[in-house]
Amino acid sequence: MISKSQKENLLNQRAKVLWFTGLSGSGKSTIALGLEEKLFNLGYITKVLDGDNVRTGVNNNLGFSLSDRKENIRRIAEVSKLFCQAGIICINSFISPTIETRTLAKAIIANKNFIEIFIDTPLKICEKRDVKGLYKKARSGELKGFTGIDSPYEIPMQPDLHIRTENRSVQECVDECYREIISIISLT
Image (cartoon, rainbow, N blue to C red):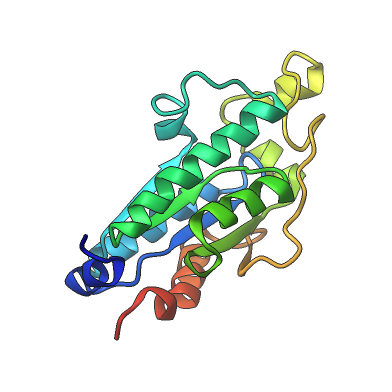
């Protein structure tokens, strides 16, 4: 078999899984996509995984119970591990609400390949950004088990990167992520 390091050398990059976590509406996916674009423009090979492309395919049979959420993260971690073994930088954007689920993902992927990035946005701002109306439905009782309202979100205790978004532009957050991870993913 061709090794991960051989693939990384071919692609001129170190494969990692950049795991963005935070509340719904925190800006995880927006920042992840901005980072992907910046890395792509610099010649890096990446793949973004988020709820939109995973829940409609690989995980379309899962709901939002705590056990289904755990299985969702487990499957995502397994897929991410495959991308990483192929030499690709996998950028994941998932609420992944509990320390237990993030620890599970980290164990599957391997500590040395897992970079936890906490997108820290106050709940009040997430609710203002709520384009899908999910917080409003959760507050009215129409949507049960919504993270941050009636289902817990456990803040990462020691994330590898802590991005505070309040009063900052998306570009500022993307640039901070880039500055912090470039030495980790670059071979030179």
